[in-house]
Amino acid sequence: MSTNREARAWLLLGADALLENFARLRAAAGPDARVLPMVKADAYGLGMSEVVRILRSERPWGWGVATLAEGLRLRDEEAIDEAVVVFSPLVERELESALRADLQISVSSLDALAEIVAASRRVGAPAKVHVDVDTGMGRTGFDWQSSLEWMPRVIEAAREEIEWVGCFTHLHSAEDDDRSVREQWARLQEALSGLADAPAAPLIHALNSAGAFAAPEYAGYVIRPGIFLYGGAVGAGHPIPEPVVSLYARVCHVREVTAGTTLGYGATYRASGPERWATLSIGYGDGLPRVLGNRGCALLQGRRVPIIGRISMDLTVVDISDLSGVRVGDVATFLGTEGQEKITLDEIAELAGTISYEILTGFTPRLPRIWA
Image (cartoon, rainbow, N blue to C red; front, side, top):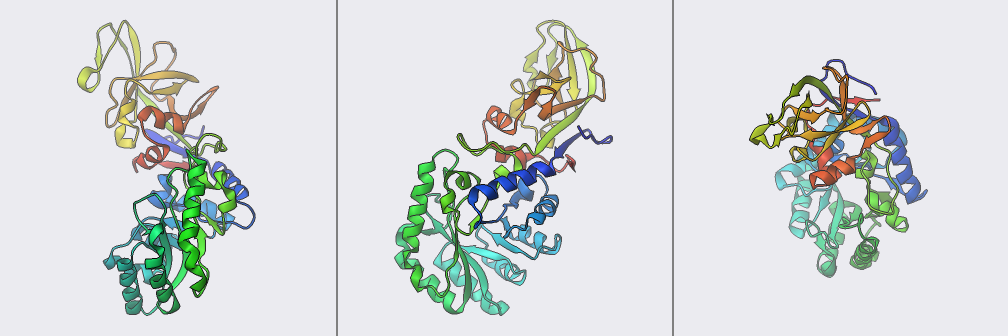
């Protein structure tokens, strides 16, 4: 275990595991597929700068983000010159900044297309556009069933006003239902039946991490992996990723208590007899889910110890009555492996009643990210 002598709690991140997961996704998609890693939300909480630095050696086709600020950060701070695609719709006031930074932007409606065309004229350069087709996600995108209404307008704009780079859809259930991937792909193909009139064939992309394993035959030119890169599972029957993230915290206090001693806000835990408790320097202010109080666990001395009481903003208490020799300064594992025991990202997510994405993106800046 790599430790930070000054940190009270920290994330340890594995560059080799990140690269291994990237290689497995690329292999699954086939030799002709290009990879567009999703690095939105600060690379799912791991740190965009370092993730981009590590993955850039693999020569991805481009990078996926969700906001203008994320795209500008890649261009300005990280000096990225590959394609940067903003997948969430931008508002009108953001368009000129996006175009001047050579960001590729998504379009989901004819009104948005008109705004993009107008911004392109003001900037004096055609916008690079990816057309978002809604095939079942429902959040954004042109309706796949009404392509006869919007497709001619997009083609008209592509002849003179925009550079039509790509066309994509979002998969809604690839982790759970392979059939849904095929259904959405069929809808996308139906929507694109009028593409023969387009001045140039756009790149077609649909597959996220789960989709790349469920239906690699649809990889086309580009896949858009996210959670698998960062160590999150993508559904039963699909490969298990290498764990990328481990979470550690130091013991800051050890005490003996008598029967009846209460613990934490709301006094939700009461010692049933003489017990020994260790207070750990981590809380929900660091991103440890508060709901794990009285139900989650940590690892100490290679053994599971239960989290007792409510998790506070800065501190968490575990019952170490079955251990001996635990001292202030010892390191506990909340996510990762210690000896023969391990706590996985998806185990934490299940206990917290959420998904691995939320766990990763919930880790706050107070936790140092240490790459090894």
